[in-house]
Length: 62
Image 1 (cartoon, one colour):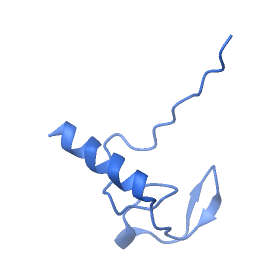
Image 2 (cartoon, helix red, strand yellow):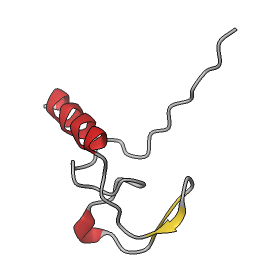
Image 3 (cartoon, one colour):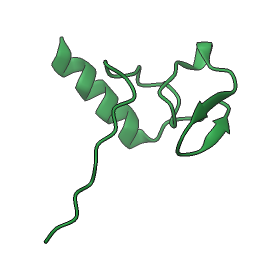
Image 4 (cartoon, one colour):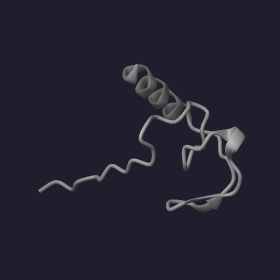
């Protein structure tokens, strides 16, 4: 039996590539935000993998 990994969707559309690593909120509109995984946080730079995935997701939606 294999374990299932649930997928959590925070945004209806892909966030901008430079959005927060934890919550997907744009850096210009980010203040102290809440994300269940990390709690209260300020804007954090996304990883290169997140940026790439976001760009590909936005491109596939066009």
